[in-house]
Length: 215
Length: 133
Image 1: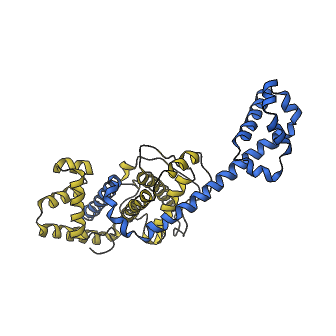
Image 2: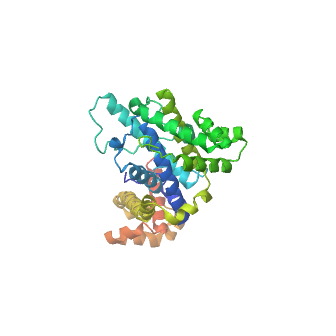
Image 3: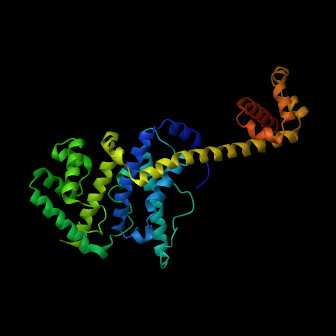
């Protein structure tokens, strides 16, 4: 993608106002996003590590930054820099997944390296609706089901032994697929307090984002 | 536990992490700034390069557009172009007409930063468009 888009002038003006600190925070958030998003996709089999290679994170990040700086993506005022980048990343992942699905349908033996679509395709999506399921067209991949069962059981046992009622309730909310705002309302807590619970959950369960690794 | 349920729970968990990360305020990450990953450093260092590349591509595109219009105007001829303007406009734009006639190929690259001259080209282009409607 080496072509100047129609939003170049407006985007470059906005980019010139971004501080180094803001860029770094944006990359930290995007790395976190990609870590969960890509591993989440393995649940559907679309993005196995084999298909993605180690460069997937960099591929999506470069794509997002270039889309903004070259002006192929409209930099909307209502989103901050990390949110703009995350939205581009998810849009691109969606495109890649569609391409994977198409190839799968054609019964290609394997997805070759560099299977990402060549064209600059940008689809504007409501990313917040996609957090819990980006690739709606895919079924879960049951190949590693046992590992997931074991992982969930281990998390539950750690939460039980921690004896923190809030944490237990938080986990129950996750199990039921509650969204951030619903959890906040159900637990009568601010988003900041929920963030703290999340940190606690991560620290006691050491839940890595890779479901293929043991807990 | 059913397999489907376990996968769904892990899916829900990742989904919530994504949502919380997306909405987390910048200050949540201040502590992380002291020790950022290679990924963050790599992409941070890449910004300036990509901005320079984007600027170069933009200039090239503008130059190509300018060149296209410029060649079209040259074919039209200075005397014919002058006829399209009123007397006052012609006098006002006289210095730019001189520049237009004297412009060498080397100057053309620099001209894309000359907003007066670009404006002049655009005025002439509009006049021709009106004339040929």
